[in-house]
Amino acid sequence: MLEHRSVIGRLVQQQDETWALRNFPEATVLAVEEDGPPRNWLSELGLPANREDLEILARPRGLSTRRLSFILLDESPTRFPGHPCLKPEKIGLPPSVQLELGHIGYAIGTVDYFVPLLQSRKLSPGPVLLQSVEPHSIQFSPEGSFIVAHARLFDSELATAAWRGAEKGVFTHACPIIYRRPDEPADGGTLIQVSLVCGDFPGCANARVLRRWEEVTHG
Image (cartoon, rainbow, N blue to C red; front, top):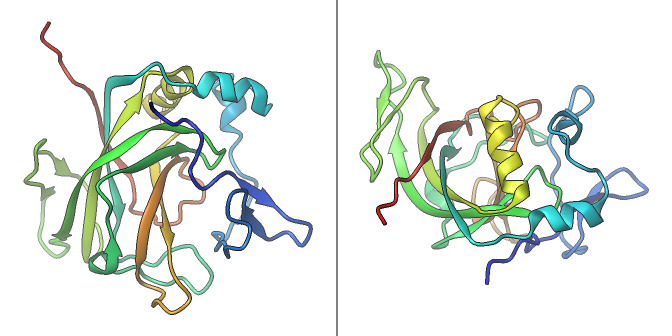
């Protein structure tokens, strides 16, 4: 059975204006530095703001044929306090994680394929070519080593709205949710979830959606 509720819960703002995870209140959440109001993508896509209706829209009927590929992270400075850089080789990658939407606490798919530790040819002209199950190219230069991931969307109303938002340029980036123990360095950790987000305040500026496609099934 596909789980549509986020395994880590939704982000909630506390009285001291810090952020916490609903399912892990003891965890420290590093929030990105913002320089303006966040984009109201729920309104743009005609989606309800109340959780009861979102819960119904998020319930999956199964997996769809819709796929996304994106850069998960690279070595560019992040928007977290102090602008630390992540090291892809220090990030633990499980076989699959949830693809969540906009930090609202509902999953819209699964991230089930990783192309780790690709090296950017930043000083070379032309696109970066990827050798993977779906060969394609990147029309910009990530910094240092980077990870590309593929996701499959659920067959749900919320996932359909997310697909529509990606087509319209509302959702342009991925946000890797990384768990790090207190004794681990700031550039490492373990991936526990990915969120599909707008491009106004991405944690990693180069974690961009690369491509959308629908798989062809033969009956």
